[in-house]
Image 1 (cartoon, rainbow, N blue to C red):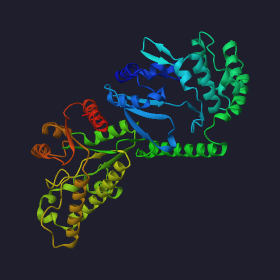
Image 2: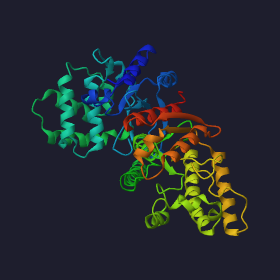
Image 3: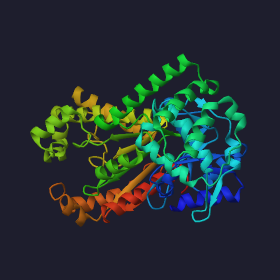
Image 4: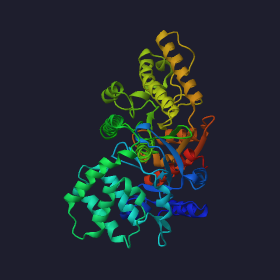
Length: 477
């Protein structure tokens, strides 16, 4: 069992909060190890106390987009010390239904909680098997046309049935309204050889009787179901094929965050940003930007130039001559770089304002010129109007990036000798030492700075960065 999940159960007990795992207890071990979401039904009269206490053990509430949220269900996420996500679905209401809408509410929460069972070996409470079987019938008859033809439904049904020790039925008031449910339960429990056609027929009758528990009328249900389905497929298409992770997941409830990853060549900036995007996008909206002049994150037209001239084009030897740096040709190259950087900075501003986690590969600074994403045209204003235009535009960009300021700057500190081993064709040893010294001196105003030893292996560095970002999101420094 993960440490954070164990702490969660202890929190419930210490605060005397009624709860239980209310479905899929056949996957309980996977849940306790963080392999699946935790679906827990809780007493809604203790909601304020519970949600305050969850913060103390590291759980953070996230905002789910409207087309993927339901009333009475809250999303909490925590990063366990093992580096595993713990995703808690906190259910105050038993909202059931098809895959897209969950259009039915069954007001039997207190009864289910009062009959929960305590498992001493895992120190947790689970739903009474009789109640679990009843809710399985309710859930699946709404989810599938012929639920008992589904292999997984059958497996779960038989698992629950073997755990029912006695008839614990006291749902006569519910069965008066849903007679097909009573007959369905009786048929499953009494018969050893089940007739699945008969069970499917009873499920069809049950669907008709469930109308009284609808949250929407039929037309609204059909419209919303289609809308949610189209939205989900649209999001999954963007994520799987376009690799766009900025929408469709959860928003950070206390506001978006910008994390800038900086370091000299060979420190693994781009690799770390890619890994953080993959890891965090599983739980929340993540926007990735590149604010440097290099090939990573360059637009298609700059990549063409790189492919033609080589990756050293942007900072070739002629760039070190002030006279040649004043050339129109060099200024036009910087202008192309600015087009990309301006676009990405605006993208970062918008994403943070909308509650996203923004991961930036590099961040501009105005203290050191010619390197570390400082000014490239930092000299007296040129008489050449093109160069002067680019100078003014670059200055404006640097002022905007300083005004925006990231919430966290993570410096990947690497020894110069290691840098030239990892990137032998990028820097000389003297350049690596010089840049390492610059990195030590650089401070981006109005934001937190953390230094991570990037000499370590990638996995160690990656885990350290994950924890630093999570500390920022949860304000748990």
